[in-house]
Length: 518
Image 1 (cartoon, helix red, strand yellow):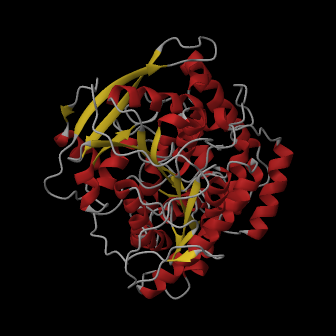
Image 2: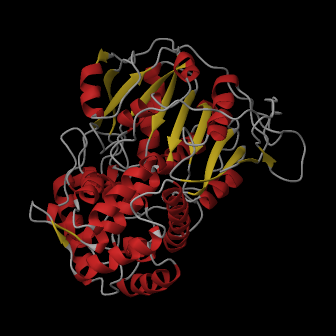
């Protein structure tokens, strides 16, 4: 199901990470706890599988032709400061479109970006509703420890239908606005359902048979195509957020080709759509509490009670939306979505606080900028709602009736007043989608080597409970649980990043589970 939680266009300037040292390891009846000041200790290999982690490979017979795209990438990155000396190369790969009406036929073009001097390719994929994978890899390159780029070449992939990979652009702008701006407190979902229905119809008309070929299953097949063309026997990869499902789907089908996989914030593979919305609303409320505490400590413009200030802002915008110079308006729905977006990237929390304070004072430009990647996008990063709607609904097995969603809106609004309504309303979006739905298989990856799963306790996009469930379902899942807030732990938690570094670079499997402090 598509989620109206689109991470911001880009993070802030690359930061140097100060790492706490090591993990306590060894047999224990409780989670290992990473404590600052402890010396690093090698962790024992997981005993749940006899398949060892494959060695890092040097590609042999790569079929991909790379061209320099440093200047273009810097333009796409905008104001984000990337460490001096980083260069980028780009390429395109053809993969079978494989529409259900024409199995194995047709092609889709996948955009790739390479950064780093390491000999081993490390594929990077991102959420459908986030940065295209190419830009996410470029941003990640500026945030990870230097050893990553000495060991690996990060290979960012724009998933089919996103970024520059034959992007989906099919939802009328007025319908995007209706979806984003809808009053989260409204249990009359007629207008939202009408917008979702028209969006679905227009996308089916625009995409034709391609509409059913945009999903997680076929994105996993794209990974196999990329592995073959990279010229490696095993695929090493990072999946951020919902992209983790692409990796687990791949591992289910190709366990023998799995190399070193890191899932950074995985959706719950077993919960239904209503339970996922409930968990996401709860995590978002807790992430907001962490944001509010950070805001008070920084003496931000929201004052001593950020939650109270935002509650009053939402109520004010519900009664009187804030007009914008372009003729649009900031509604309480727009604001709720903007806050969810800002919470996802904790490096953007100061900017989120400023945008909310400005809106309280009658200037909605900051909130408008936060939702802009969803509403309109750019030439190199099309509006993210479109691909998320199409691919998300293809993956979503639950198509709920309007009355069911209305009941959930009422229930979650009472339980999680800031975000319960807006996340419950998302359950409407796939109701009119006409493509037959197929439930993804539970991730087991029988016979695959250990898979590292990073969980963030208060993740407003993919809650930590879902990542914990994924680690449990996997035949060789290894859990690192960060007791922090934001979307994903990699490059956000020094402890979790250190665990991923040891796993990917040194083949060191952490104790299962390991807990990282906030």
